[in-house]
Length: 126
Picture 1 (cartoon, rainbow, N blue to C red):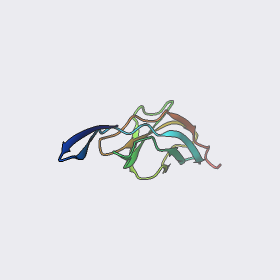
Picture 2: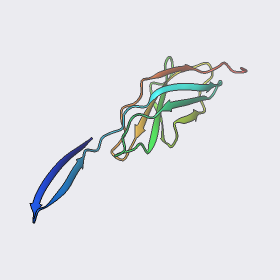
Picture 3: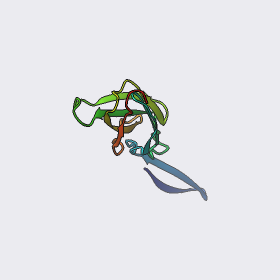
């Protein structure tokens, strides 16, 4: 967010203007349109649209969070420092449902994650 203040000073019939601006740093917005491009028994390839992080503090990377939905560990796995808006998660279990979320990171910190996306991997041999 930018705030502008404009000051006028008269000196010997010249008008000088000084523009003073101040900006407030902010966390990036959540990525949007998270989707699956390709699924196998052990991999999921995700894509997403970057959130609106603005020109002041642009997004520098993304973090992906995922966990098994049923019967698996409640522990969430994080993949950090993803430089693009797509990523292939490997080492997943076959025929298992996972929840995926993506968060943008800028110089201020990590923003809120995207809405969760539920994906079920294929069965082995498919």
